[in-house]
Length: 207
Image (cartoon, rainbow, N blue to C red; front, side):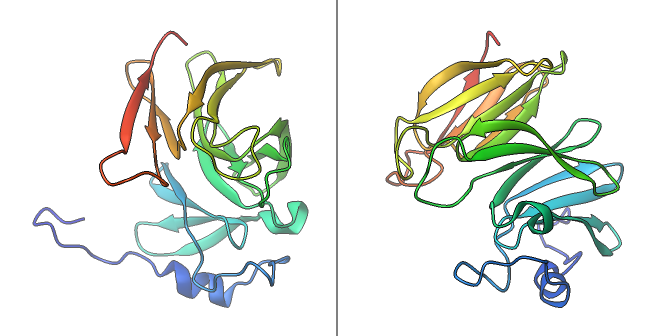
């Protein structure tokens, strides 16, 4: 985004994924241009997650694109949706519908591309954030329903020892979350499914 409001293309991600196919695309659920959902900036580069193909890619400000990890190669079609950086990349997945319950996970991906699961038993993950105590917060869009449903979203805190605690439940189709500089979580609610004007940002304190 330029100061005058105009835009300049940095990199063509659609072109990249078309010329660099992943190992295990899903023929029944395939979007040639991708469905890019989440991105973080780390050390001067951008790292973007593509859920439909299943990959995390690095984009420099000069427009160079390279693949950090082909998530589909080791995890299959799990629909990775969100990425956060906390020394390594942490990626959560939406998984496919209907929601089976407990099929989503958190992956740790090293900058060199090594993928390993660090948390299991989650649902429809659309947000990850960390606090200053190395505790991870996971935003689940829908828990306990076969498809996206209002009132079924929650936030789960995962301590460094792996203990899980639900800190907030009853959210309405939340789709994004970040940790603010004030130590509070900021969550987008009614990210889809509501009528115009229903979308809002919630501030969550007392973590």
